[in-house]
Length: 127
Image (cartoon, rainbow, N blue to C red):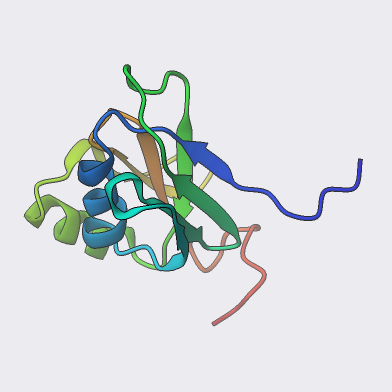
């Protein structure tokens, strides 16, 4: 199989609420929008990946999780807490050396917000 492109598909229970969360609260940039205004689909940039929030589900997605690397988890913790985001675990340094915080989207999708410290082996870009 030669994969040319990929994205995560998320079918929210309340699309407008999820668009507000991913677009306004998290501040993800929009890659593209499609469909009629009453059933708008949006594809958001996720660093080097894409997240499509479209359609409608009767029940929240089960087993889906997102991993989002940011430059400063502490700053995002403060910003997201002020915005009323559900923070299920505040930032802490894990035994494997990453600083992780866990939040949830409006449907309860678990999202790891991760900072890779400057001295961590995953860090290739020394900016």
